[in-house]
Image 1 (cartoon, rainbow, N blue to C red):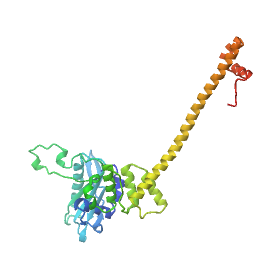
Image 2: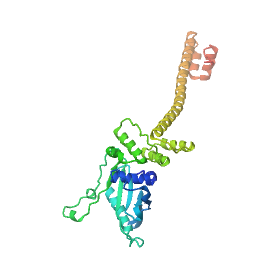
Image 3: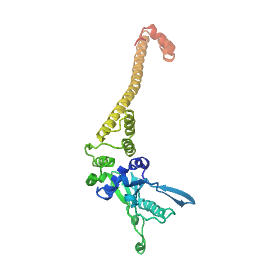
Length: 317
């Protein structure tokens, strides 16, 4: 749903991260859903609009199958900006998932609930509808006949009191955004990042900062994938920024130096020439060489000849 769906989906697709999000968001951190009981499913559906068939797919969807029985379908949707029509979009996803249980393959199977969670990474509170009722004006006489729908919203940057409910790489990300929202000094936890590649790709996408990707390439070149902590990531990002800044500063400084030097040189050249010409004119006036003076004013070649004659021009300067 959000602008960073593709990258975020890669990290959340790991069962340990997915289970951690479900347990932290829905069950107060209690280990209800185990990663071994999760099975990824491609939850796609189609709908017809404008006489064309459109396809919709969840960011991440997994069946929860404890004891070999499907208990539920969990879906994760990611948002970087509030969506005013999120309830309408999600009820479409959930409805399609329920409809999918009525296919020939699932017709005789036990039916299960569909639960969708929206992970919102904004630094300001979600200020758009969270209920279907809020998306439209429903006459009071019709409300008893319209089922409301509520989205399960997780405002990641506001998980201050629930941070301890999470334990996977998602906790590190949540901690980062909490501190960014508060705009306070950030002292990263000593927790190691388990899925380094996907973690850095997510940070690059959410922050719009290519330095995270550059750090990823550096770590890959070093073949370092274990023991990485957020503190090291941020140090590398900061150092990369300093290096880029210094490099750009040198280039800019050199460029500006050339331009400034050229401009100063031009100015000094003009001042020198003006002084030489004034000296020549003064000498010609003093010697009453009026014809030569008039010619020198309009004839630059003759002017240079006179400057040389009087020894006024100094080519070595």
